[in-house]
Image (cartoon, rainbow, N blue to C red; front, side, top):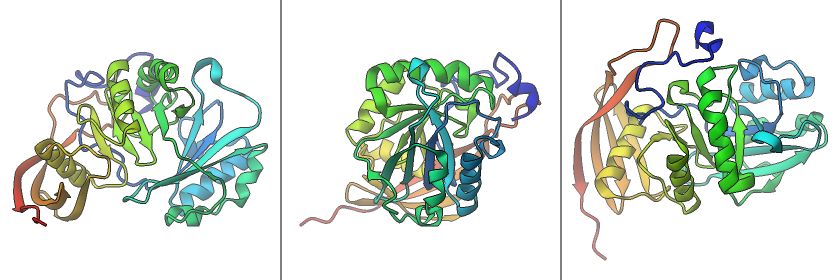
Length: 306
C-alpha cells in the first residue's frame, strides 16, 4: 500500500470495500502453505520483514521467509496483551488434507534459533512444540500497514475473543487490506473478509465444526486464485461445506483456466476467466481489482454406485 493511505485515519479504499458490496471470493493469499506465528506485543513495523528488535525475533523472521515459511506477529486483543515472557509461538502447515499446528512457549525469542524452518516449509512436523488440537484464529489489526485493518479488525478481535477466548489472536498483515476486517482460520488457512461480528461468529462456529460458510469466504491460502474460484463454485453447486470435502485436482490454462474439482463422490470441470472489477480505489491504493468469474461448470461423472 502507498504511504498516503497508510498514514490516513480514514478509509482510502474504493466504495463498497469492507461492506461486502463487492465480492471477495478468490482473493486469499496464494503463496503461504507453512506458517510461524510469534507473539510480539509490539510495536509492529509497517512490514514484518522490517522488524529490527528484538534482534533474535528479527533474525527468525528473516530465516523463515528465506525458507518459504510465512511469519506472522501475533498478540492478544485488548487487555489480554502481555509485554513480558513467556511468548507463545505456533508453527504449522496448511496445504492439502494433512494440516497441522505445533505450539510452544518461549522465555526468550532466542529459542527460535533451534527451529528447523526448512522442515516446516516442506510440511514436515519438526516436533519442536506440542501438537495443537484446536484452531488458531487470526484477525488482522495491522494499523501501521493500513488504517482500515486497525479500524475494523481491532473491535472484531475483541468481540471474537469474548466469544471464543484464547483461540483468537490479533496479527500482522494477512493480505487484502481492501477486505478488512479479515479473518484467517488455521490450520487450514481459510480466509474470510468484509466481516462484521455476526458474520465472523458464524464463520468461526462453522470452522469449529469442520465446515466453511460461503458468505464472506475469500478462499484458502496456498491455492491459485482460479482454483479458489473453482472450489467456491463447486461448493455452491453441491452444498458440500466440509473443510476437506472439496479438492481441486488439477488447474490448467491461463484465462480461461480449466479446473477439475472433486466433491461428494463426483468430479466437475470448471472454467474460470479473469476480469477486472469496476470502481477502482484511489491513486495511492495498490490493491488489485482482479476478479475471477466461473463461466462453465460441468459434471464429469456420477458417483459410483457400490
